[in-house]
Image (cartoon, rainbow, N blue to C red; front, side):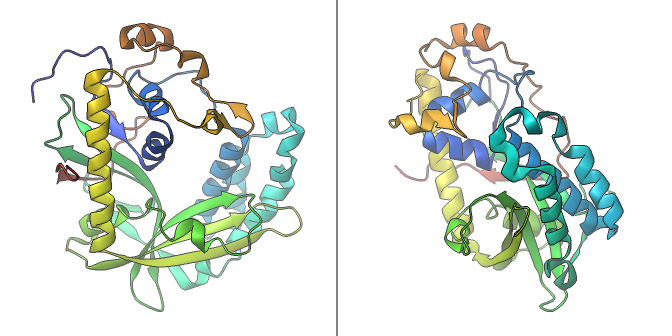
Length: 322
């Protein structure tokens, strides 16, 4: 498609589960984070950094079954330098996070499932950990390429059921004993079924997904697996919703008007003001482009860290809801 003139500098629209969720909450957050390039001075929140450290450690254990290596990976990623900047960080202290990693390592999932290896589009074989994927949405109304991207935390094989399962690791401080309502209709793992078909090389009518929830605590860390079965109906629901979102994004894009959230609670997160609050009074994309001064990625660079997707596929855009 011939690119139309646009005041937005981005060369590709790259959507993820988290950015799509942000769009549903506040279209302006999506505009700021996706259409003006990457900011090189942004830093993750402490809670996110701790979650990343636990991911690194447990994923290393899934690969190597070496506890020392897992602890080392966790310690290297843990945000020690900012832990004491805020007393509210104490529930996710190094000690509490280490205790939670030990609980993850000793969870039944390690014995009941084994990590699989997959063949990437580059022709090599790799452990199915942090699998980057991209789905190109072809035929969209946008004058730039549109992609849906993500990372699969792990693809596992059940030793009992002899079936594959895609898993997402979640760290939390919510003390609920049963988190199933939080995950049952969460759509993050639904498009993983499309990627699983690519990995297996054939269509699948249904597939297993799971959320491995880890409650971070020093004295009583808890780990629980929440498994669900998804089917083509779930994938269809996800794709109709995605196309509907892309249609709305296109209307905002061409009119250069992205609505703000209607509830001011959205402007606060983790006891902090929205990162983009200072820009929200401005509407002109050419002005915002100069203010934000983001780093514009090449249209083929789909991830912030320049990783290449291991698995790629295409889906046709449809005007789902007229």
